[in-house]
View 1 (tube, rainbow, N blue to C red):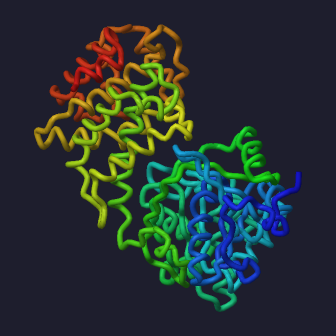
View 2: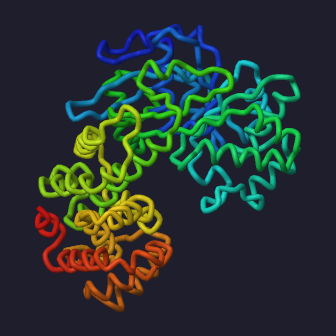
View 3: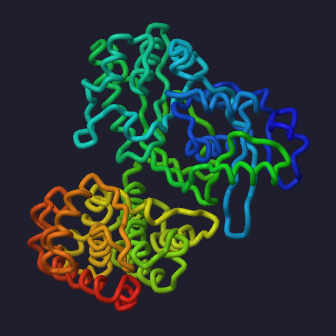
Length: 489
């Protein structure tokens, strides 16, 4: 079968959307570090849409920081790839044309630094996952003992970390008399722009105080909130795309139709017309992050624990169950009063959008996967909301059930007596407590409440909360997740 490429675009089926602009006119205005599936289903699609408005010619040069796989897949395709959106009504295909080239940092780090320093480069964006920032998540500060940071300080012209690369590019621009590029973090980190700015400043100061001062005075680090479900691409997905496209594509990405991008509108040297194609250019991103954390992530985690216990493998199956759909509505009714609505957002409508996304049967989002690392997620996703509701004297029944479902899940045994593969940094500690206390809901909940890293010193003293959780946990053990959720009404 013929490979997807510029020459093969004309042979695409009429139903497949393709670039509606002249790719030959594009210039490499954006360098993206970490050109994985999420970036290609989010940033690159927004940029593709912006190009079709006719405002600007912002092409993207991707950079792989570890392996050549992405370059090897995209180079023979002239940077083109297919985005398969899995909608309830059926698949939707489009070919994305915003990517011009892909560099591989370990093969030639100096070439990547030169691209960052080029006058055409005006934005350097990142999706390198949390660990790619070489920082301490608890403090937000740079880990100066991180092996990549140690290497980059020793060899500043041939860096291998994202932070080292950004600083090397900025240093080269300063030396050449150019202004800085905008560093745009697209990873799911709270206050990600502020975090990135601090890390860059920390690293630059270790190299040169004057460089750090220049970056602080002239640099731009907008915060962003990104949202789209992008499952890992499978061999079956690749085969499906080839059948629908009539061409081989070695690099398709899969995602849901929904997308959201809130961006702090602070750029050093311009940006694409993202605002004309659905991005929300705002003065403050924090309200959007907060809304997503409590309403999406809090509901996702609660549904994952209850759904898994009830035997639902996916979020779509769990949210499609009328009992759990009603539970979600009750949960959002408790959460929404604690969420200040971001500008232009109706929170009830947002909750409706979330339920529709959860129910999309074309996206296989496993409850087991979302249930991972609950000890890290619960404090941010649910317990802050619990504290506010307790302070207000407001009902917490649905929130308490979400916490109780987590407790039942981490015992390591499901409703049918089958083992649960609990993936959590504290899984061993949970197993010890569960083995010692069995299904004594009061004793087990008290033991889990005693883990200060999760519940702090205050929540174990809130008897309205602890009694509600213990009661729900007892019901989960006796009657199961579905009956317990149904009893809430």
